[in-house]
Amino acid sequence: MTEEGLNLELIAKECGLFTKTSSQKVIEQIDLLQEKYSQNYLVCIYNYMISHAEEPDVIMHLIRCIDMYRDSSSLEYLVDILLLKNYNSEDNEIKEKYNNVRVMCAKAIANQKNTEVVSSLLYCLNNKNENYRVRLACADALGRIGDRFAVAPLIEVVKDEDEKSVYLRESAVSALGLLGDTRAIDPLVSILEAKQGIMDKFSFLKERAIEALTKMGFNDNERIFKALKNSLSDESSQVRINAIEALMESENPKAYETIKKCLEQDSDIEVKKNAMIALYNMSDRRILDEVISSQNYPDELKVEAVEILDEYEGE
Image (cartoon, rainbow, N blue to C red):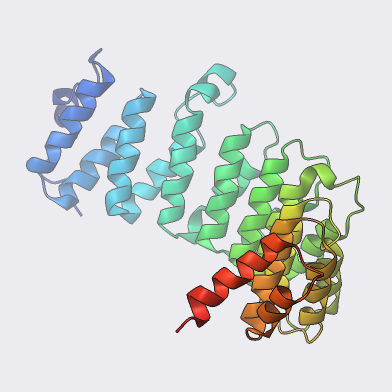
């Protein structure tokens, strides 16, 4: 890629980048560049413009343009924006102005799958004074990039009970699930083992922990099985449903019996439905026949069982 023959400053001026032209008009002029220049030239132009643009709407449009090509030469410019290198990063008004820009920037950085940016993403993630949405985007980016050096810092976020944003802990949990590193198992299981009443308001965190463990695989881990089994008594019906799905995916010989007990004893009809479907997927239609013929199950569950038989067994 070369800038030879390009007057980048002139091109930017012609697009109205350095004037008081409305953001929409600048964006329209940027879009017209695709009719004049090849991809290599466009990447050079976008890189130059994004390093000089000041209006958030224009910068976000340039990020979209850069993300179309995902050229490695653009990475440094995206990182500069994420870290606010060309701005006063201590000015809260400046940070607030560019929050949406930086969230989009983190996503574009993740799309390049380049592990060289991990330290920059971790810098934002670990800064507790940083906007939580930016930190969320960085946690997600770390999971998508898939670098093993991100595992330990993400674990620290998950374990930090003083972390103000439970959403950030959820995002870190999800990122660990994507990374699939077994070092994350203990802190994820600890979330599920937390006593009811302490963690009940963090049910989403438990849901994400179950999803992450499922992605990582846990067939021979008795501690995980026990934590999932105990999760079937959680106050949150969605946590119980997630635990059923996780147990269904496992190869633990006690999984079927455990889910069957949940089918028989849980008071929530949606949980019962999910338990029944899981058992059907794990074996055959016998569980559906049992539900239909037994007086121990509610009519709504019987209707669901009949519908499944009609749909999958009718032929």
